Image 1 (spheres, one colour):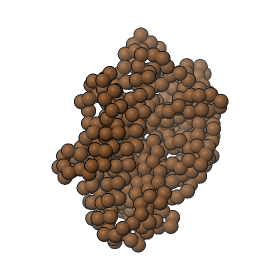
Image 2 (cartoon, helix red, strand yellow; image 1 turned 90 degrees about the vertical axis):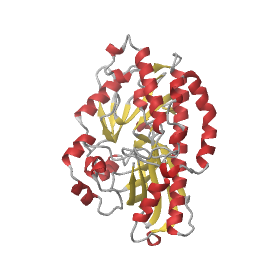
Image 3 (cartoon, one colour; image 1 turned 180 degrees about the vertical axis):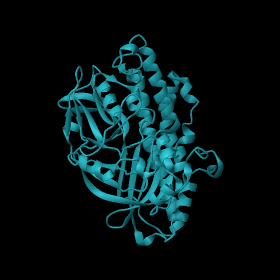
Image 4 (cartoon, helix red, strand yellow; image 1 turned 45 degrees about the horizontal axis):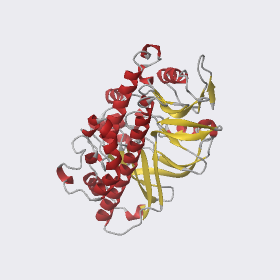
Length: 401
């Protein structure tokens, strides 16, 4: 762990040894560390890279305030993984049919992103049941903020989205089959995030010029919008968790149809956020902890750290390192922007990098090429004080949004 002292702010503790940290990200961390309500220090994970307002891969502890842009607009984004009773020998030699079945079972990408389109007109009723459990609280939120009614809320429940969201079939060190996926609160979470970022900036209009970055606008506890934001964020986090669970059910069902055999699918299961805020107790104080691209790693707690498309991933167990506010990285972390990756690499580069994975290999996924991400082995080595590896997973099927 490296320590960076900040003039006029709290210290920054970085678990980044052996992993590059871009200068822009370092400057962004310093800006956040200067906010007056930061508690004790910032904790920085090895997948750290530039974000909006605050750096992705950072843990931001605060007393009596929340920065909506630090939580971000993909509220509750995270991972779910489940180990099955299947082994590699139970999978077909050609995995294309399995990938196609998963793509058909889970709405994904820009074209098929809702449950009321195309092949998903007859969506399973599990999504209806899940929405009923969420609808009452959502109505209370939209009663105060009507613009949130006109969002893809119910229609996005059980859908993957695009960008770096994915579904994978993986094999662990014993050749056991796992299903794993990455997604969050979709359109409604994005709308909630953007609405409250705007409200924070409007509330602080007189003070924006004094902030290091306008996206560090915040709500103080007890202020007009603080409690409403906490309510909306908690709802979006619950939506995200339900969203992942529904998609996992669909993936398991699709696999059962393709393989034509029964199997257990919940021998080990993990469902964790990595973009969220919650109240926790650290160093004898009750504080708010914002994990922007970071996972809770309390002692004994299981988490998921995915590598890039075509690289290995990890099921980990937290070591409860208090200096990191009991956190770890949420993945490998990008080394270049999506635009830069598309300029630098070709479809042939993508084909070579993912030769061992049944996945799309076209120009629209070049921005997710493994070389656009940090070395996952270096990332794991840098956070050996934070987590221990329980399982190492290698992808054999990858569905991209």
